[in-house]
Length: 246
Image 1 (cartoon, rainbow, N blue to C red):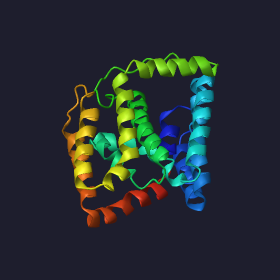
Image 2: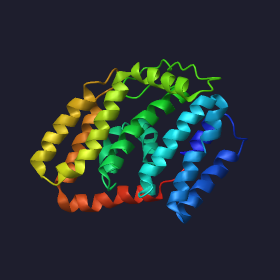
Image 3: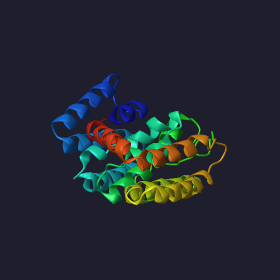
Image 4: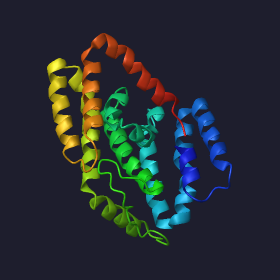
């Protein structure tokens, strides 16, 4: 996450992104909280290079994010899974991958943030937006914005112009939050959950195939419906979150 931000946003000299990624990784291995803080700090200067106001907004969000994930710092960078999963058509697996995050609120925020970050990465790369396939980049008038309030308004206006992204973020956040409770209630609860999540996530889709989302949701339900296999699968996402770094 840190390496991509350092490379994609103009500020750091050539070669620095790899070094920053290594530093974040070593910090995470030594002390996960320090690793999370370092990863969140890396994009601050490049963002400030674009807009001081945007840097203030990002700094406030990053501070709140660190406070939220301080007790589970390994899960604090789970939002970076969104841009990694999107090209594979695997965004629908986010609730399953985040299953082992202990806090309901953290699961919800991690899944919702993964959707938003996926959209941000798509805009920076100039690729199609997730869930809609729209190729038109989002227009943001942030250059030279010194105040946090104008920057926050510009960001909200851009998000409000794409309500399907907000709906998907809410749907994935709710799905990730509720999944452990649903899984504990058995197969029929999972079946109802799968159908509900499919409706909530597939209906807002634009010119994007719904097949990967449907397949991922049903795969999630099938995996969790088989307790013995699920018990083995649960450990993989947890370990990935614990060791995932910038």
